[in-house]
Image 1 (tube, rainbow, N blue to C red):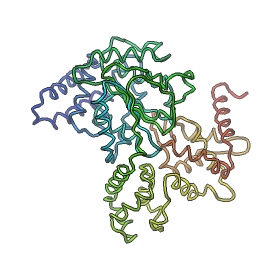
Image 2: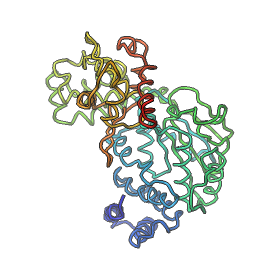
Image 3: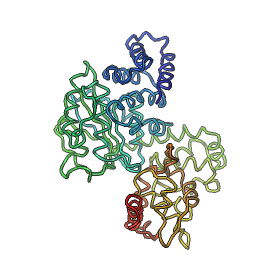
Image 4: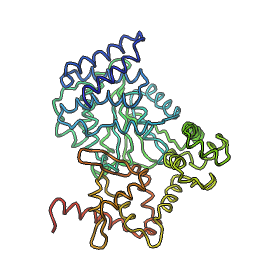
Length: 465
């Protein structure tokens, strides 16, 4: 992010607080502005910049793009440590995950209670896919500007090395710790992370806390660390006023700690989840095309909200897919009683709707989807075409684009200087594709799909054997 873009964000913030008497807040903005205007970001005291960013974000209810602009300063500073400032940018993620965010008040209340009631520790938020764990953490970052790391298996950000590299450089920048580069040993084990946590905690002001959020522990590649180690080498003990907020699915992962640990299972709060889902539907039902769809069903808005909430099984991912399809007319000729029930039900319905169970089987389409499922990093149309092609089946880029268009709501598109890259949006769809019944009906072998990818990568690096 350029200095001009960051300066523009600060100008917008300054306009919003022009009438405030909060001198410390005004001072924080002025200090950031001075560091930028003299082109001295890389040489500024990281503790001032990091603390000022958190103060501004904490005290103002800023939109996601403005918060991303401020966090962009932190990213730019990491360039002085030898890290590509764009490697772990979260501006797109913040915008996507916090768009139309509603509710989750009870989750934020638990977070506040934990931070105020414990001297340090781990808060672990658990729940099924689609319950909003990632969106809740993204919203927390938007509100607080805290240090964060989001594991995203589909784009290949899920190793212990990436976590240590990302979080350690954020801490060095935020607290002005005395490192000109990230030492090689920083990503070899958890010792350097523990050292940084201690050094950062020593620089905290009275009443200040160091909060680090880490999303999707269940997506971490456990083969990237030794057996028996805590996941991501998370320390068993934390210094005072240091806290980790973690999310994972409801499964056991290696994390044995002596510091206080509390689990918040979202599945144990059905009433709150249902209320939040209904709020989300109500917010979306104000859009004109959706109101027209509701009117065609001869339903009241409240009955629509109640019925769709029931069908969704309080799953936000279901709603993220179904609501746009109601607006676009995909379900125009169905009444609400015939909508699919639950996230897996939606996946099955869409699978059938896209002709993936037709006879003869659409083998090109099926292979492309399973390639996207297994490739684990953003890939171009050309590379997908190469992965999907073998001696029996020829797959061109036009065929790839047709499938990407048909399945666009399941895909994340990343725009790069070398062209567009695509990856699966959510790991729950990968889970669906791995269900034994779906795999058998599709006539594919996961092992064969992985072999196609591996063979093409081998040829790309070493040439044809």
